[in-house]
Length: 146
Image (cartoon, rainbow, N blue to C red; front, top):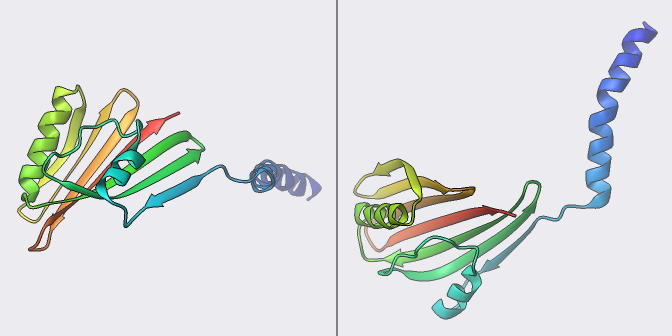
């Protein structure tokens, strides 16, 4: 009986110690949002971590920067509006990313929505576009390990 209890204590001790250490040390994760800013302020917020070309027919209206400590990475998400349809947005981004040596996968295109994933070296990119009858909303996210 005591052998079984000792094994259970040892099995729980390591995860418990890790949890206590993470809680005591605190998380280094931060997220900063730039909403309701003009386009030049939003472009400045994208910074050098936004390593993909940006859609020249779109207006940037929101940026979110997330810094994660485990694993160490920076994710920058830009939100755009355009009058172009979803398939055109997807085709444009896919073509431009491939020119820049990104590998584009998981492409989905429909009249009212489009998405894809892409990677280059260790950088990852996701794009989604939706249109509910007005302008097309584009969300482009780039994750870069640090």
